[in-house]
Image 1 (spheres, rainbow, N blue to C red):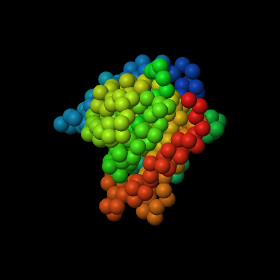
Image 2 (cartoon, helix red, strand yellow):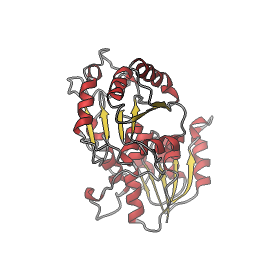
Image 3 (cartoon, rainbow, N blue to C red):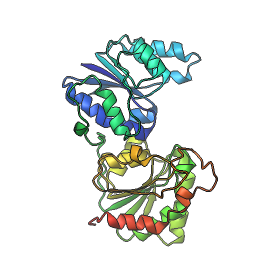
Amino acid sequence: MRILVILPNWLGDAIMATPAIELLAKKHPSARFTFVGSYVSIEALKHHPLCQRAVVDETKKASSRLMATYKFAKKLGVFNLAVTFRNQLHSSLLLYFTTTVLTIARESWHSRFLLSHTPKIVTNQHLVEQYSQLAMVNINDFTKDEIPPLKLYIEPKKFGKPMLGINAGATYGSAKRWYPERFAAVAAHFSNRYDIIIFGGPNEVEMAAEIEENLKKLGITNYTNLAGKTTIEELCSNIGGCSLFITNDSGPMHVAAAYQVPTVAIFGPTKYKETSQWMNEKSIIVRHEMDCSPCMKRECPLEHHECMTTITASEVIEAVNNLDLKV
């Protein structure tokens, strides 16, 4: 059974779609997937054992995206089932242009017009639940109790000693980011128990360097700065090998959840009930309830950022201790 899956664009969202993909594989034992998505989502999910084809969607770069989408659909061909996790016109058009009969997308003005199944998904629930309900819309006996944990098929790296991963970045915007000097203070506190890895994407190199400078000032030397130096596959593998992960609400946070890495996640302006770590047995959220949160803004609209400034290093250290890890 050939199944087309249009993945979410963001790394974290793509990983939160993996339980839905596992449900599709379980409900359709002969399933063979074609994944279409952004570069980061494809790099993370292309290792699925049932993935026959993984294609980066380049149609946005075309002079006529409509024509590019049509040509792309014809190259992909017809499927037995096609589902998009994007709520976007061109993803609905892509499914429509494949001429696949059974097509699924979240309800919108364009999906209702173009596709066969367009359920209205309640948004005040975890994104994993939303994606899973979408994928299972034509399965009569599906219940939310069936939703599995997150899943990545990239082998975790094996380190010779306990490793603490620090992730101070968050691609969406500065409002989601706690402060480098506070990450460094937390890392320094646990440096006698763990070696430290500083993670970050190409746009977070400066932030990671600031953590590094603060660690140097504190006399800490047992760290490695990998910011901007890893592929998506290497990022996932390294995070998967960590013994502890301290992070903002971000894609790497969901990578850690997929590997069941004990995690302390720092939340500010985002909806933690919808994007927190899914089914990670050892995870704690550190956040402060504010009148203005969750604002879901890229930058603090009130210019005080109190949802993050009021969170101290000592609170995060206490949260790590509450995980009760044996190292």
